[in-house]
Image 1 (cartoon, rainbow, N blue to C red):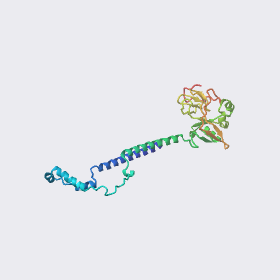
Image 2 (spheres, rainbow, N blue to C red):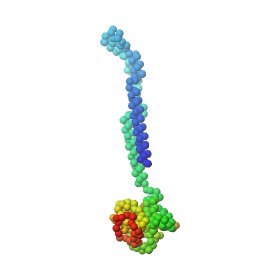
Image 3 (cartoon, helix red, strand yellow):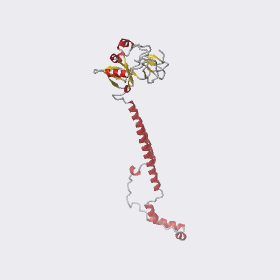
Image 4 (cartoon, rainbow, N blue to C red):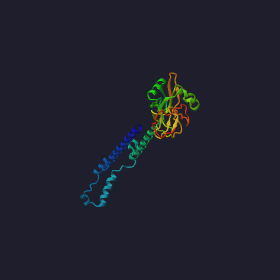
Length: 286
């Protein structure tokens, strides 16, 4: 949107430059061929050089008569005081065409750089208090568990680009020893849920759920993860990444999507969940 506005402004400035140059040229062309009133008055009082005068006068006589007439119009030195020189007003002289074009070009470059700088600042400006990159209130734990059940074991939160699934209480002891990041996610695990980043750690594809196997299965290269994001097969270098979680006093899950925690290493299996049906993506091995 910013670049569209900048483009419109630049086009408007170019149009003004073209119109100004055209008007300047038209005024200059109109000035050609016009005589000043002083010149016209002088021509009227000039010596008649008709064919009759030329025929009856010699060249020397004609020059002498013209010289005498001109000498009579001269003012003797010291008759009047000299007029002090007053420099012309720059506004009266006006701006030359070259200066106008140069200033227009500089103005357009300045406007373009200003728009580019504004776009960079807007891109680097910290995001607001909502959306991906901020701390998101997903809702009450009971409502989240109901949404997971309604989604067949998976609950997707588009605002946070994350999957939320159920974490079994029986696996908490293994999680405390198997997850080095447990202090950052422990409150959520103890509440029975886990928040997983939607992208595959292999090459960043979005990982969908598989309803039949109850796993996450990447359609790009076949990486497979169990329901809590631990790697089960494929080329992925680790389990699915996840977000820090905390539970408020109102029993609401708060997920900090501004911090991404690398998933557990290969071989981590705190829940022991195996595929509960046919895989949606072939090619993974476990």
